[in-house]
Image (tube, rainbow, N blue to C red):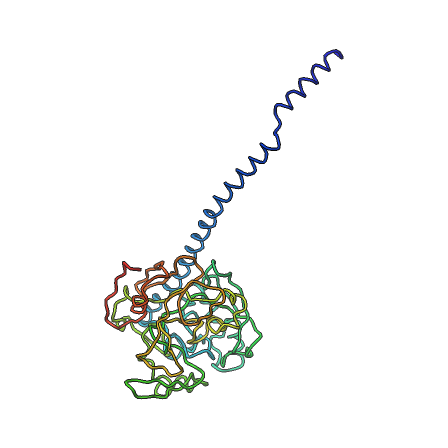
Length: 366
């Protein structure tokens, strides 16, 4: 046997030599793999973004269908609420008397009834009721978020509220990436201070948001300017479908809101994202197609604010937009969800925000 060993060893060594790789061959293989990976990575990223966009649209569809279910039940769309100092109250319905906004009123219609009903039966304005409100506004929901932008979690807020026990700053609340259609002008939120509106050349001083339940329930005093709003998410309202004179298929219901990426997690520094998701009328939950150009709201003098992709360093709390690279999504009042190019004609976008200007729209241009 021993005289065969050298021959066997030589055979094995020869076989191993034939199965090896040279350094050059190895480098070529690595280079090919790197090229393939670089070609596949954008496709993988695009597929992931398409999946996230689909989830985002599903969230919008769920919220919008909830609003339309509420409308079918009560025969009016939910009120946009009373202003930034107010949050939802389970015992005050979904119309004129509801100080909270859309996303609070829609909770029972998106399988979140128990969250909506926290504090039900307690006296409005009582310490116990206000404490119960804290539990609601501190609860984030995935359905309120676009997964391309951020996950659902409580984020820092400010301003507090009249009917809750939170201070003016330093607390963490639920946020939202979606906003109701406030119209094509800026008279959508109940401001802290009085607002001067010029109508046909005549200045009219309108009061800011109410500071008590009694003031909020006083239609004559605090809500004179509601008819001037042109959208469908309005303060102190019970808007019926018949009032959407342009038609449900020609009017936005809700959509994705613009946000500076620098403020995704530090939203207390952004007035379009510094309140909780269940607050009353303000820029956190309502967006428009136009903004006033000065401190006096002149109804015939608004600058259009077309939608825009989230852009680092660009702050804006008026317009619609999203974290998606090519399109943002809007839901129409007929329940359909559309992916719309950022290059949409600003005038077409404005018309879709106005519920009753009776101007023609071409949906094929979306």
